[in-house]
Amino acid sequence: MKNIAETSGIDNKNNILNIFKGIVISFILTLILLFIFSVILTYTNVPENTIGPVIIIITIVSILIGSSISTIKIRKNGIINGGIIGIIYILIIYLFSSMFETGFNVNIYSIIMIALSIIAGMAGGIVGVNIKK
Image (cartoon, rainbow, N blue to C red; front, side):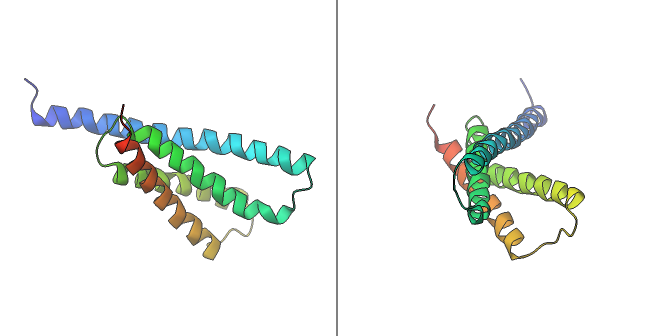
């Protein structure tokens, strides 16, 4: 019979793996959607002022889907795990942005992106936990 410490250790390891899986899925989906959007921008007359809102939508959708998929197997604490996925995703984005972009700063747009990423992760976690297998 397994004791509680062994069982919770296994659960924590699986939880971390599922969070990592959600982050990877979110980034892959983001890259695919950004590529599609860049092709649309290149070959159509879509105005460039749509870039900001579309990037927000792509980010939110990617985090929502990534956290939903990763919390399907967890079956508990979806809001926490999804929120963690949203936080880590946006922190990675902002770390890379600050390294490669000159004049990077945190502004109201950044704060909105951080808040929406966390909310999208939490919502995706709730959806994923409640999906019936």
